[in-house]
Length: 369
Image (cartoon, helix red, strand yellow):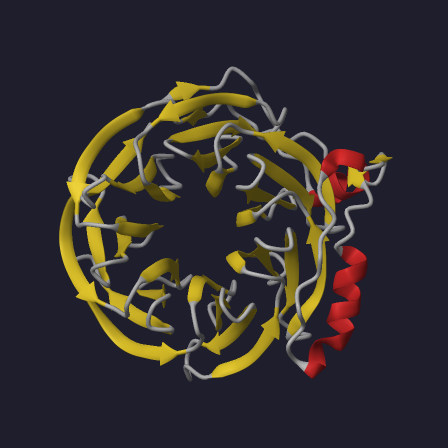
């Protein structure tokens, strides 16, 4: 683990918003103009109008640098790599148990993996084609989006066992899942239907469904506001989903083929991985305005923020690129391996875990440090 030589202090959200309003530049080549997707519900007519207006990338704000109090470390190399179950498609770290939950797409299972020993402690069948996992904020429960069976599995787990307590039909092709800050709502993105659905985590009923842009893929929820942001690959936008309005209230035009979103709520930033033109777009969450565009090599498919380390981790092809939050410069690339599919982090230690598959489908768990 490398120790940064920079000493940073994190500025507050109000200072960030004030600084963001100081300098507005013409975008020009900053990104392609978005083509709004079809809006499938009559109640979304107002959102469709808002989408067309807000998706035009007409300006860029200068976002203030971030700082943290003490020098901290970030990952610079692969520390270990071990074989796990086949075809891993997603991974999350559970802070309550200290375990990793890994989805396996072809097998239709979720496994509990001890990151210290990198051994599998339990395996539970879920729906077909699990592609995404989200954790309940209180611990002990995971939600799994099953893209082939059109369901979401509710999985209860401990530090040694796991069981499916419900499997809810929700969409044609659920591709990603996220949870509201209070754990009351489970958001499910349907890539085929171009919608996001809100499921009550207690009653397990679908509360409402909102259209998004074309071919939505990734979703992230702002812990401070509860607003969800959805990356739409085909119309190069990020949908703004307001849970109070229960629909898309606007869209932000970004770069080519946005795939995943990561949010740093304290700094009021979102980072969007654009696989189409090998870039990361920075969004000011207070104004939902475009900030910097960071170029990376390869097609960025996964993105994760590490605020305490002052960096962003991006999976791009066979590498993990490390980006400095203060300068938006690429600090380095870690050569990991082929077929990388997921990434998560232990916030206490800063250890980064990456899943991948070999050419023959064998699963690999990499630890970076």
